[in-house]
Image (cartoon, rainbow, N blue to C red; front, side, top):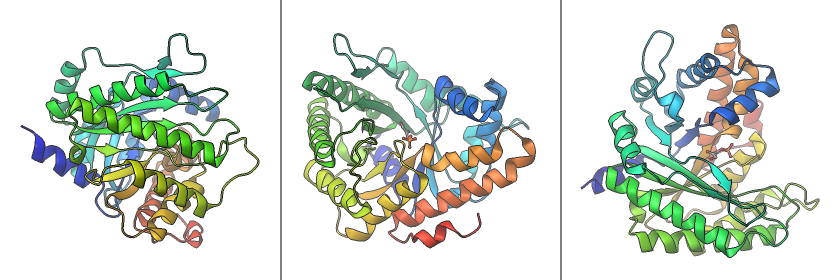
Amino acid sequence: MYEQELAATAQAMVAPGKGILAADESYSTANKRFEKLGIPTTEEMRRAYREMLFTAPGIGDFFSGVILFDETIRQSTKDGTPFTKVLLDAGIIPGIKLDAGAKPLAKAPGETVTEGLDGLRDRIAEYYQMGARFVKWRAVIAIGDGIPSNRCIKTNAHALARYAVLCQEGGLTPIVEPEVLMDGDHTLERSYAVHDEVLKAVFDELYIQGVETDQMILKPSMVIPGKKNPQQASVEDVAQWTVKCLRSRVPAAVPGCAFLSGGQSDELATAHLNAMNTLFKDLPWQLTFSYGRALQQAAMQTWNGQDTNVAAAQKELYHRAQLNSAAALGQYQPEMEKVAA
Ligand code: 13P
């Protein structure tokens, strides 16, 4: 019933030069980031912060969509304009995080399963009414001694697929996000092997559940060695290995892969995306960004909870968004970092 709308939304989300701002941090994640900077962890501060982000002049040139959190989709600017309207007026599609977070997987130390399937059909209907047109569900796969287990991968893939088909039934384009964490000391090769296994399991389950792959977006992590591995990979190697993995596992019908940043520095997240788009011109899907930290870090630090810093913080966000838009087109140059925000 919604097929055309779902596919059109997916195409718009990954339109050339556009990407997605992930601003769907839960209460605890948002508060942790505020605490580090000494910003009060109140509902009003979270609202004021999101108002700063969403009203940044010109961001509609670079963001196709913004992922919101439940608290945020119900909030408005100080003068009473709902955030969903602010985004739509800027030409940005409002999206919403649907999962209820990664919880310990039973009898599996160090592994998690993402919860939130109960009552999901009703929540989808409510968010559709509120103006959301796409949604996100993040599965988390850790690499370590003896993990990930096949059970962890299968269980998360199954939940992702059940979420995605329910969303398509209810008219919301799903972002399918299987994140393989960068924590640990694993090698680039191990990261590749785990990404390969995870993506295979995810697309197998999507097929079993009847998810239409032209009506979704994949949000993958990049193939990167663990943060603690002294042998880090070059930008070009990350680009080569990541694209190799996607090429062998992601159907050509998927309109786009919008990467998460996963704890990479702002510059590296941009450089990796740019390298993929520079080295590979013949890919079946768009490669773009759906970053959280790598888009927000500089802006949040500059804002620091002060009204007087709003304009400067918005310039930081604009600058990062512009650089990532260039990377999505393969037109980023490191010198562009130095241009004043
Ligand atoms: P990061 O880019 O900070 O990893 O966040 C993206 C995201 O939406 C994780 O679910």
